[in-house]
Amino acid sequence: MSEQIICSNAALGYEDGIVTEGLNFTVSSGDYLCILGENGSGKSTLIKAILGLKPQVSGEIRYCGDFSAKDIGYLPQQTPVQRDFPASVREIVLSGCISKLKFRPFYSAAEKKLADDNMNQLGILNLKNRCYRDLSGGQQQRVLLARALCAASKMLLLDEPVTGLDSIAQNTLYEHITKLNKKGITIIMVSHDISSAVKYASHILHISKKQLFFGTKSDYIKSSVGRLFLESEAAENE
Amino acid sequence: MSDIISTLQYYFSHPFVWYALIVGLLIALCSSLLGVSLVLKRFSFIGDGLSHVAFGAMAVAAVTGITDRMIIILPLTVLSAVLILRTGRNTKIRGDASVAMISVGALAIGYMLMNIFPVSSNISADVCGSLFGSTSMLTLKESDVWLCLIMSVIVLVFYVVFYNRIFSVTFDESFSKATGINADGYNLLIAIITAIIIVIAMNLVGSLLISALIIFPALSAMRIFKSFRSVTICSAIISVVCAGMGIILSILCSTPVGATIVTSDLGAFFIFSIVGAVTSRKRPTAQ
Image: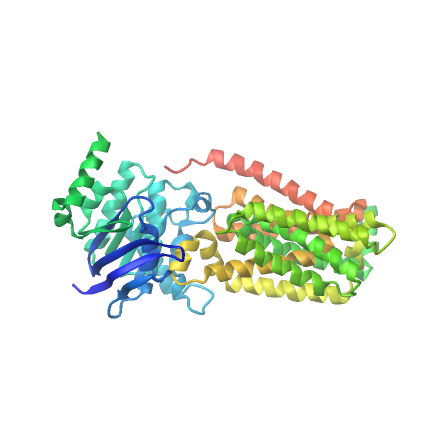
């Protein structure tokens, strides 16, 4: 297992204040890391930092070896613009290859094949000519997941991928993500669904203004932070 | 029928009518292409705001008495495009409010300047001309046609070459940024090109009606078509057909050119809406 991202003592934020600090974690190839935290705990700032879009205020976030920001496939949260966007599934998945274009204006046959393969992998090849806005929420997320796979094959960074999905669609999506992880793709998933995080992830990073926990899932369940949050979640569900 | 043909024959024997037709179709084509992106990105208001700025800039240019008014109008409008885009986010005055402010402000200043420093004896005709498109459409010089032709070719080449990137940035800015696309740069470029098209189109339909050229074809195409490419192509075709029809109708019925084109765009929108509603009812929606 080789390390891909090492974050040491990083503080993130804007000019007018630190959002989150004391971040120390390592992501290795094949990991399934779940980043947990309340709203406003700095999750979205951390995403930007991992993607290399926002430099940290202090500390270091380092890509190891030949790993770079280009190897991260990103699945952002849906925007209102997308919900009624007139685009076919194929157009959207293919747009994941955009960074492979370099100076060419159009996609090559190899890129079109990559898009087809990724749609096939996620079971949406039969939807390829359908309109994105006519799909169900779960299908839409799989389209965006296929697009992220076209962009990068080493790591996927998923921002609250199951938000707004019904429980069946959530499970399908989680299973697809686990399948991809088993093929060797590193997964980083931001979530506030603690029970699923504990069920599927291999590592947990829990932040709230500062880092509360980083380690393997089994350590998290035993830790005081983990126990507290799992209990409060269980209480909420009752 | 033979009356109509002979009237058209008479008009089209004059080069200025051809000029008007060529310029009209080119502007319609360019504005409809950009329109797809602007409407989908919820930027339709930019066209409206910029057209009022262009009106104000024209008033300023008229007052200064420069013969080539483009020297003032074009930079001012482009500058406003950049400003609107910048203030659209992360500022105290939110996007829609700031556009409304800039657009009404420019309109007021323009009208005031035209009144304080009247260039001709008939102010209301001047104002009406710049707001609703004037007969200047029919006084285009050959050089105007060339300018328009060159600008249109630039816009078309830009659109085709960057088509895939425009799609990516329009559909998902966060993803595009994460994959290393300069999304802000493309937004800026789109705003600047919109500003240029608006300035050129002002002669044709007038500054109040320009946004119609930008948004109607795209909205009509979206009623029926389901992929980005088909929406773009359909929008271009609708726009060119409506502009051609509008210009010919305005010649035949001696109606104002701008208003006639926009009315035919509006007609197309209704037809496409009805067809869209009927076809989507037949087709089962996905679950």
